[in-house]
Length: 402
Ligand code: GLA
Image (cartoon, rainbow, N blue to C red; front, side):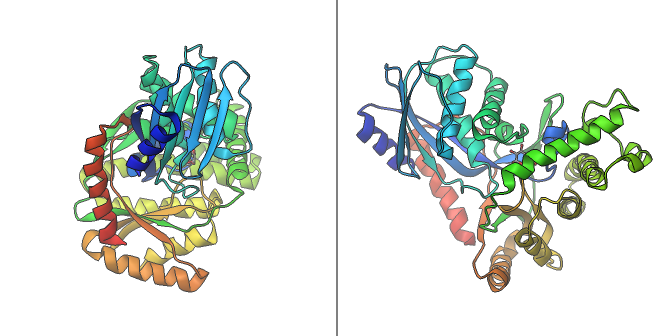
């Protein structure tokens, strides 16, 4: 696809682009903890968006979305308004952040596209935002630090896509490292890469193919519910700034002052945050069994207390419970659809996929999409010759499973 994106660029704009890649992400554990200033454990994966881009010495941004086969153009001198097409908002949102921060950017030509499935919970939007931020920083030689680019990408999502997301997705797309997961403390922004040595296990994603329209409105509601919990506890513990500072004892002691639904939400977040710390310890000790058990606990909390799962996700997780080839499974990302993440024994991959596809199809009348995730580096410039080899490897791995 990269070659096609570059060819399209040359055809449309008659100049030579540079190329940037930006990956989607998985999250092993730590769901809905990022905007509560807690811990997350994501990784960048081999589902990527590519950008062919070059300055055009005009004051206009000319953009072609390869997957959608749609084109847009907007002027830098005018106020950059939101658009009705969602992909345009990711582009405009990022450009607006550069302008807001006073960076000298000029017009550019862009063709972008890739293989991160949309609405599957693999953060295609963060990949678009981060890749563009990385690319603009490069072509206009702005020297903006990577963490700053991450924050700009997140703000683009808040202000133009309208989702008050945390920082995890953009961080993972920018700071991923091949073969590693990264534990991020979303309060201090300290991070540490952990070798994801899963031995003879692999990370398998099962995409329900359900894209729930509820996702963004419920997401913002969950955020408000967490904030409501913090307000109650702050009366007694002024040091509490977010659910990160809350303990299970505090929640228990003041339970009677909470509306039950707010209490459930907070209980989930505080427990999940503790689980990330324990799960990282399990990973360091090489105790994959214990790690997998935490994934199931995480799913139970998301299903019953945080209530962001859906029947399709629950079904896929339930299918793995008595499957000896699976160490752990849970829904991943914002919820209401998208993927489950599963840790599956390598030499059982084929049997696992056959079983789960058949069961899902029988229940819901359609097949889930399965992917084996490889952990890759965060956003980078692409050497066009190298990429060719790289994607061949990725294709081979996918073909082995599906
Ligand atoms: C979405 C958001 C992230 C995070 C997850 C849930 O992917 O973009 O910031 O909150 O949901 O963990």
